[in-house]
Length: 331
View 1 (cartoon, rainbow, N blue to C red):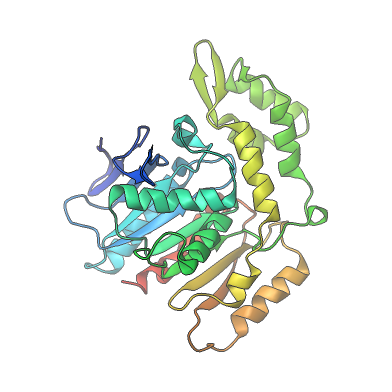
View 2 (view 1 turned 45 degrees about the horizontal axis):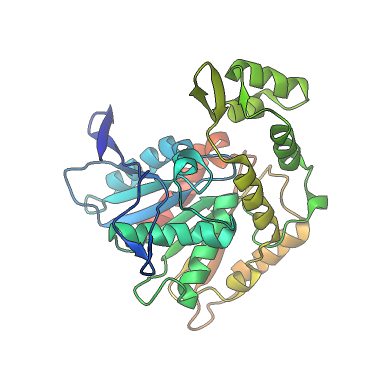
């Protein structure tokens, strides 16, 4: 059921949460379960004519991207009276409200996370998204979605996105030696905690005592939900760990070297991010510098200044300045 929340004059956040089987079939025997999502639109009074899917990162949820998506939709609306964008903020499997959805079966990997996006499109009878934007783990889900579309994995009706925006997500296999291992440390810490904790304050203090930063500890604490007198995780931790392992092992260099015709793959690298090896940066810049290669799409690379990995928090205006023109060019 749709619920409209007024955030400021002339602006609505339309939220739809899917936590029950959708009226579609997977094959002929099993109900097609779909991930939870919410919609962000400037106005519900006019029909939208373009759609962007927004895919969050590990241990996050769609709500992490509400503020940025509202600003993006408003910017696009102000730049063109004929441009009505809909932002679909998904909760990936094992995350947010999708953690409560039964039927999102293993393996919990990047391929199935991308398939979830396709299943959502099919179950709702939507047109295929014009844009898929993904952060970190979500960036590889976006790349996999395009690769699967190009291969025909989603059927003949599937249409490739015109624009992929991959935000601070290394496209190849992740070399553990090029990271400080913070994500692994967080996951190991959470796996060693009980399934419920006394309070968010307790968790934040506990994480800080273990040496994690206050900002990271607070962010982890934001993923708690009330359960009786205690707090439990809003994500399925073991499933999320499996997704992270898949993220580290997947490789999309071949997609970047031969992007599908009609699709631009935009890589946004945060200036202060510690996830980028110099060889990877050079390889991306070489791909972006290539002349148009006949029937293939193209790759572009942008550096987001004054930002670490959390691009939409560290420099939301700078990110908006990169993303908004990409979407406006499609209108």
